[in-house]
Image (cartoon, rainbow, N blue to C red; front, side, top):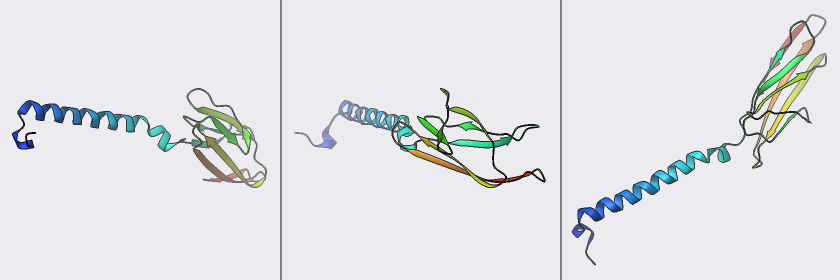
Length: 126
């Protein structure tokens, strides 16, 4: 068997091409499988409905299989968008969103609200 420095240029080009091809395949596969590593991305906001005591929780949870608002499962469309009506109680309340994907990865988000109906003020923090 010849030593490495005695190999011809065709052997070096072929070996380098195979290594580069496998590196590209591994990198591409790693990037395409990132949804398994990252899990559910949960984006949500609460907005007040105009001229109404209702509040709307809306957002997006792509790749979510189950989505719960305060323990109650809510509808998600194909793209992961959701919109649900919420009637907060007077005073301090906590609204929680819970999302789970098909691989069991979980994402949670909480909104802490303080509503004073007497003075029509509303405070929200995430």
